[in-house]
Image (cartoon, rainbow, N blue to C red; front, top):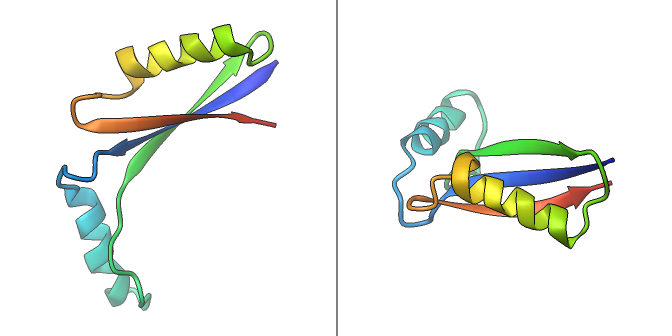
Length: 81
């Protein structure tokens, strides 16, 4: 069994209002030194078998089809463990 992590983030040129709201709130909560925040999503996909090239290709297709909106979001895959 393997776990593949899919991290999805807005593309850099896309406005991130949630990240901006978090960045504005941090100083009010006593946190300093943060110039920007970008908010994203994390998916953990557990596979029945090993994370071989075929399985990773399937997870990549899942991300392109359902997990990320590739018009405005980028994604990365990594095998955990």
